Length: 140
Figure 1 (cartoon, rainbow, N blue to C red):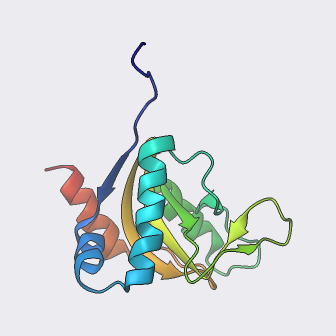
Figure 2 (cartoon, rainbow, N blue to C red; figure 1 turned 60 degrees about the vertical axis):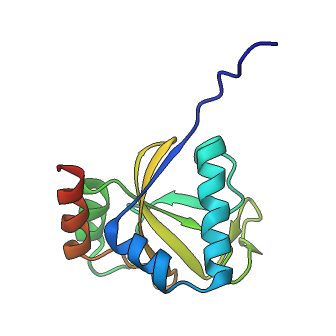
C-alpha cells in the first residue's frame, strides 16, 4: 500500500575504528559489531539488547570524575555493550551487559559515529588524540 515512514539510522566510522574493523577484529567481534550497526540502521539506538549509555555517567569514586564527564559531554560520547564475547543479565535485570563495549559519538538516536572498541571494566574513554582526529574528520 503506502511507503513506510520509518526513519533509517546512519552509522559513520571514525578512521581508526574503520582500520581496526577492516584489519584486526576477530570474526566473532565483527559479527557483534555488525549486529549493533544493523540495529542502529533499522531502529536507531532504541531497543538494542545491550545497555546503551552516555559516557558522562561516571561513578562517584573515579578520581578524574569531573574531567571524564567534561570530556564525554564535549565529544557527545556514549557506549554500548555489544555482547562480546556474550551477553549477560545486568544486576538489575533491565538490560544485558558484556565485557566489551563500542564507544561512539551520539549525534542523535539515529546518527552515531563509531570510535573505539574497549574492554568495559574499568571504563575508559577514547584518547584525546583519537577524538581530535575524528573531530577534524567531521570538519572536512
